[in-house]
Image 1 (cartoon, rainbow, N blue to C red):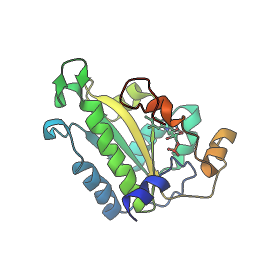
Image 2 (image 1 turned 45 degrees about the vertical axis):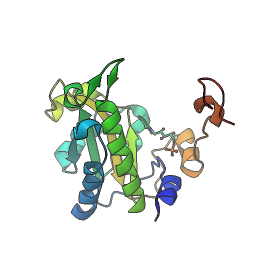
Image 3 (image 1 turned 90 degrees about the vertical axis):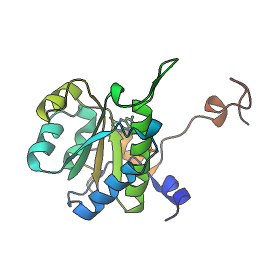
Image 4 (image 1 turned 120 degrees about the vertical axis):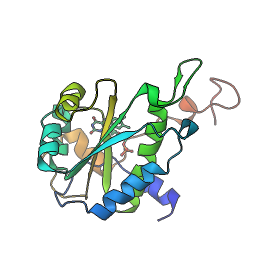
Amino acid sequence: MDVSEAVDRRRAARALDEKPVSDGLISELIGAMRLSPSCNNNQPWRVIVARDPASLDAIKTSLTKGNVWASKAPLILVVCSRIDDDCKLADRRDYYLFSTGLAVGEMLLRATEMGLIAHPIAGFDALAIKEKLAIPADHVLITLVICGYPGNDVSLLSEKQLLAEVERPPRKPVGENFFNGLWGKPWA
Ligand SMILES: Cc1cc2nc3c(=O)[nH]c(=O)nc-3n(C[C@H](O)[C@H](O)[C@H](O)COP(=O)(O)O)c2cc1C
């Protein structure tokens, strides 16, 4: 699969199979994050690979209602970072979230290439998970990446989520986010 196909195919799908993800594939996901660029090569991400029942249970009992679909996941990556672990530059340019987000983005594409769903979420009780998984208080639990093989059981999905399985949620008109040479002048 080439990069453009991976970009096209990557979806935040929610119907998961419970089949485990092998050590080899997990190593590939980790490898993709490790090669990601970061400010000054600081590599500020810290990731708990959760696939044992105790860690998974600690996470799954702290999901928001809308994320109950993730309780089927055989693998969850708990992605954390800390402001002091990356560049802190003028004008609020604290790069830890940016560098970590880039690493997650690269990993999502590699997961897609390997036929996995890798779906980042923000809907969880971060403080509860931090406590249960011994994540230090000065780290931000940025996202959980819900991983697994695509499945057929859609019983845990809402109507909106069901629709999103088959149709990619729409994007804004390009000129709303992309400007032509000057702030606010829409890119046509
Ligand atoms: C930072 C972030 C937080 C998200 N949080 C959730 C979430 O809590 N629950 C969920 O089902 N999807 C979540 N998503 C997935 C988005 O809803 C999804 O990426 C978006 O609707 C676009 O769909 P697509 O990725 O399939 O193109 C999140 C995505 C990102 C990047």
